[in-house]
Amino acid sequence: MKGHAGRRVAEQRAAELKQEIARNDYRYYVLDDPELPDAEYDKLMIELRALEAEYPDLITPDSPTQRVSGEPVAAFGVVTHKVPMLSLDNAFTDEDVLAFDRRIRERLGGADAEYVAEPKLDGLAVTVIYRDGKLERAATRGDGVKGEDVTANVRTIHKVPHRLKGHPPEVVEVRGEVFMPIKGFERMNRLLREQGEKVYINPRNSASGSLRQLDPRITAKRPLDMFFYGLGAVEGAGAEDLPPTQWGLLKAFEKWDLPICPDATVVEGAAGCLQYFRELDAILAEVVSLAGPDATVVFASDHGFGPQTGTFFVNAWLQQRGHFASLETKRPS
Image (cartoon, rainbow, N blue to C red; front, top):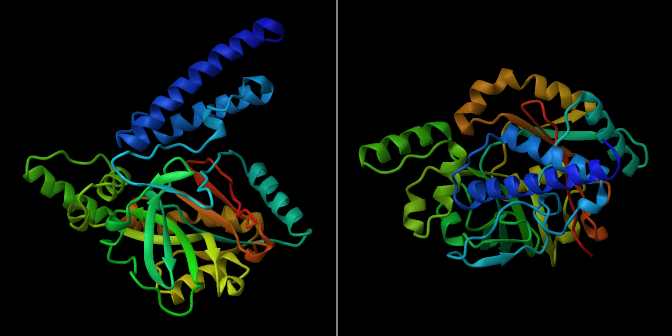
């Protein structure tokens, strides 16, 4: 349907989609009470993007496509991220992955690309800032620009070190996923049920709800875990010594005593990315004991730009129930 009639239908549908997506964002990120399955939510977002691509004048500043979902809760202090924490977009086919790989290789001057692949755990994205090796602040992703200050709660997670080992940069912001292992989730729900309290729907909600308790003593009793996978802001002495590859970065994290996913590995090109995902079933029994992941995240191993250049790209994509996604994070000059 073209012309004015088509434009009016598209405008009406776009308004409906924006309203529905915003409502689900609020339930998912603020209330911790999701209503739509992830796949259904993704379909709404993809439909809206398609309409905005066909009719660019439908794009508004408040469109869900123009921002990262989530809103900081006022009860927590608000933290402004020096480097925005962006979300993942979706694609669907092997051809999309090949196109992604082609874009990466073009940025690298045509060289073949290596990727670091790892399971995507369904938890809560968190950033942790260390200054002079000491944990200074932790925050949720929030709306991508501003998040909730959850420093006291993150300090209760046993695997998150209060002091880094080795020689990290003077100020380093490390990012990862807080999640709840399946066994811990089942044990916690059993105890809550015995106490006559509300039980959690799934590990993702339990991780989010546990981390966002106003009383950190409650968080300390919850079986939370965390794996780190990326960087935010890096400042001061040592920033220039960071590894130029994603794999090197993970190895540096290990030296600093930051936990990383044990299933992370280097793969070759788009074919290696696809093969890793297709083999995920072989390690699923082990992975499900962590947090029931249903996805794979792949980071470009060679950042190709260097942390000191002023712009830092982490190119990643996620396959979740057959959907690929792409993530691009920039470090401003």
